[in-house]
Image: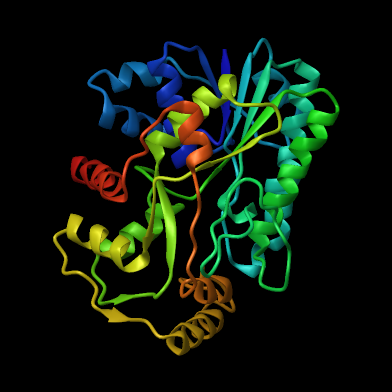
Length: 333
């Protein structure tokens, strides 16, 4: 049996799909008041019997701070896939990032140790990988170096990795994955879907930087294999394609029949933009751009995912394939 935290997120929902396809018995932690219907919609997107597959998921109501719910979720479980996390670059969320990403991971690790699970797969991020900026190439050997430019999100994910390693020192068998920007069907207004929805509405602008993207289906496949094939305590970068934002924005726009963005966003415009958004949301609302996202949008990022590719013998899908999959999902809706 497998348990998944964050099952309604893009990664978690695709891990549930991969496990169900493998015939595994699955349990998923569900926060009180959360709607799991997005998981059913994703399963129906991929499978004619998606609704029936959805009925096979055992939902356990609770969150990362409900010790009793974590114990119940991990009772008799072999593998834990820890996908739950807060992704935010809003400085107002610094406390929430530490609480959810660090304290929440510590609680999952403790519950897994108590339950004696066989192995945990922790979803981290390229944000904790060093060496990938401005002409460099990030890989698993390059540690996170915190500086004045580090986002609260990156710091929280690096601290969460330390909690996993603390668990390993206490006897937990665990492996870590570090996906880049995950592209896949998901809940509107969440994670990469926010970016995709905005671009599909039409934009003339693109930032100068670059990043890496990975198809959610490949993340799920890699995780369900690495949880048995990966080495204890090792990190594995999950990278589909490194590409400029201009190309990514063009692919997304084309998938919605929109013209390709053609105007470069200069740094001064980004600087003006995050300041304006900060003022606009001073008394409520979520900023469309923050200081961190503005200042990183013009920077080049590049990552080497060959370690996981070699071990698993996988061909990771391209950005074009990932975007086409989301477009098909949105057309279905």
